[in-house]
Image (spheres, one colour):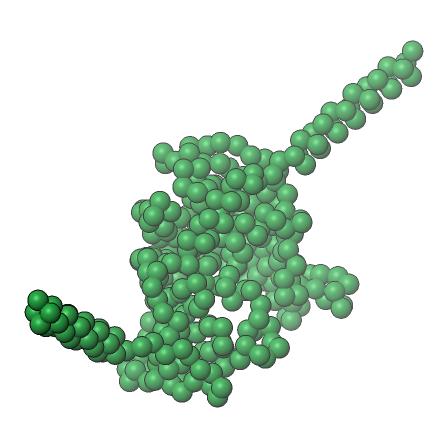
Length: 342
């Protein structure tokens, strides 16, 4: 009888465990939410953005940055300058090449220092991260660091631990506790975090809190060592809508933790950063590809690169004048013929 009692207890315990495990496996981000994110991603290619950024280290202001992002459906371009530096950095991406320029801020001169042709078999040009870079810059409220939210949740290691509903500052938010493992550039990321998604604004991020442990692979990737352990707290301010899509107005990033110098016998140093970033956004559907070229900065195009030349406005005006003149002559001839035959 005692054996039967213990057996029943084991069966019940196993059933509870299996049920809870099955429930955890069923938790996921709904396809409707992912589609909302992808709708925003398509819209985001219309955004032209200026930004201003202040960085604080250990509570003291360390640096200022400013710049802009320009894009259309085929190309993008960025400009970045730190306060007090002589040169700004400009990056151009089009279907012919990827180029990096330095601009002398005082003289307004441009210097080409890196060029990668589309035909070159290099990761620098071909990889999709180039497009991710500008999306994460213009639309951080739809991103996890360097990755779109729609891509994050599709990672095989992404696991949803809990989904709940909360109200924060009057916003109806979906709180998603998650865990993910990522392997990127010889680094291994072990992350536990919480996404706070605004259900009324395309499930964009209002807040993101996560703990990040970064390991470096050693011994030909046979083992790994902890290199950084950081807690992130990111707040997003959404102040406006453009074509019913939420546009980020500002973002505050707080990072605290430790860094381990593996080259110096594991010497540790603290991390205490705060980044405040402001955005000014507008929509432009008609940015021509010609703006994303070296010639737009007065520099020669690479040998063999030819861009379709737009017909000058004066040519169209001359053609229109010619057509109107010809039409006037035809009408005059018809009027004259009608008088002579009448």
